Figure: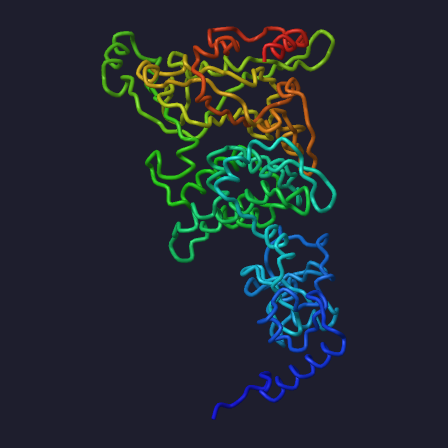
Length: 542
């Protein structure tokens, strides 16, 4: 004979409940679907799973925030974490001796969501809640995107109103600056608008099966970055901003605390670390197509290097040395994820009005570094080398990093030079090698994001300007603040990092009418104090 469990009702009890329910229903003339009483929770859940919980009206969506780390607020454990749908706090477990169970008894908060399985439960009765009205909460916790949604995500031209009443564009949601993490926020925003990278991480199936060695902490990075990308592009968000708390926790752990939440860091250094680490976390190798990072950002340079001849020897000795292998020019192919742009030194003296001179330089002059003829000397401890570069292969998305900060023996100096550039149609044809010119069909780029550094090197802040393809307008994001700006405002700031997209629709010959950038040898302005006229001319061209 099978022993009946304590919580399992007997057959006699079920018959009484059914008889009582039928009697009450007969007396009242029958109930509608909405007014049907619940006599046995377990049986009601099996027969009518969408009408079994009387506490759904206690859910407060305004307090729900799933951006923070999924750990119990009492025990600080990560396993079996539930979110209270009434107050928004996280608690562990749902058994009789757990923190969630105790919280339900103390505060009479009954509805909880399992943050791993996305199932709702009612405590302390401990039964599952199945109701279609809760689907919006599950979507905010874990947004999902179909292939059709991903294809049309850039075409949205209207704003969405969040649950809190604020309006936003998906992809242009503010990121919370927890303490001093604005350096990482601008990088996350810039990468979230790189279309191949964004589409890759919008679909979790693309990287879910990537296996790392047991205990490898790098496996957290693509998982957290994918969650952040999906939240930034969420069309059904409760709030018009996102907190990158979990993403930053993974960054702190993977970088061995080199990049932290409470300490300001260099955005350029963080971008280089993040791309390289994410490439390794996706099991990337040295092959060009081994990861989405290399497929999107990797280009190739040809570097020509020759050793500088000593000056304290005779002319005959110099001729003899120049014919040896040690002093002959050597060429190597160097892959790159970003190109560094060297800014000219800032002037030491003020102008005749005793005002600081803010120099300007066209972007075309900076690209002369990669035209294959411009040489630059690089000094080492032992020897000096002269190098020149030319581009062999152009990437689909070009990352430019401007060397604004230079460390001396006492402090870090910032170069205030303003770079003048058009926001569309820069042509890198003259930077290609002769072989690459024959193979590269498309050579023009358009700007999609621009990272700006404001203030002093140690106390400054970062903001980013992003092009929104749906509205064809530019927006500026600084922490939680998002505003629309004019394209003419972009070149007035001290750009630090830029993302350029290769135009694969029109060739350079077809874009001649758009006035492509001139890479001829043009000297920098000698007196940049009177810069308003020159700058307005460049802005009009852009």
